[in-house]
Image 1 (cartoon, rainbow, N blue to C red):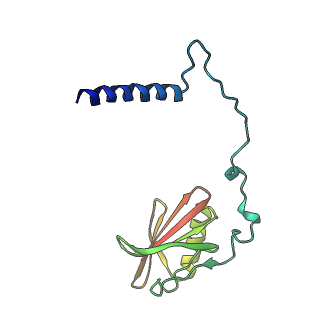
Image 2: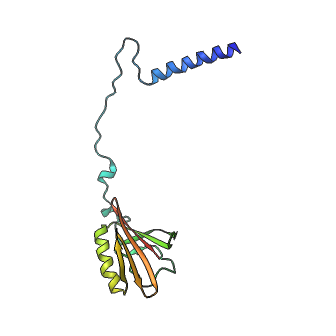
Image 3: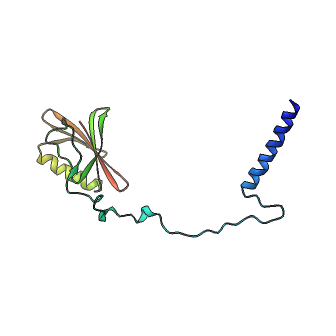
Length: 154
């Protein structure tokens, strides 16, 4: 048992010494090591522009397939892409993503909804509660970086 403890103590001391050496501790009597650095410019994301990319460029239509029970006649902002769909806390939802700004999309919805026979029952905090007959939907518009998400709950 004594031997194991003594060996364990030496192992610990050896690991601690290696750790100190690996952390950049200068050799005895020496100066710390200074690493040369070089400025390489901005990150690639800072210079990325998808507007010239044929596959990523916004299209004049929506892409993705709406579920069959999506509210009939409820306008969908274009250009947009379905980014998520499923069942939420208040029922089903479809989430769209667009490169256009939230204010632009919000203004478009106000006009398009009235043209399609939907009326805005309530508007608060980026969300529109809309109704047409017995149908009701909540449209949430939220900017997130370079894209805007439009979540339609129905």
